[in-house]
Image (cartoon, rainbow, N blue to C red; front, side, top):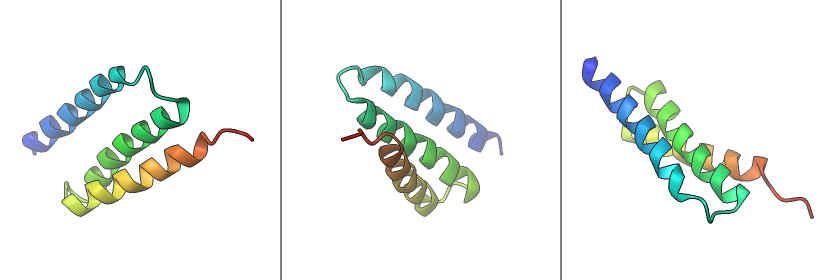
Length: 73
């Protein structure tokens, strides 16, 4: 149980630090990356850390983040 908590905390810290490299990205790109990261964490937490849950969560989170910040035309 303790290892899962450490892994989750490490994933959140890594995601937070990696977003610092996003200064040249558009608002939509940043939201997509953030959505994918958050989705991966939530998907992993809901499925007990299974790879399918993490990948599925990242995919769904990325799509949601991308669509929420669509530029108006």
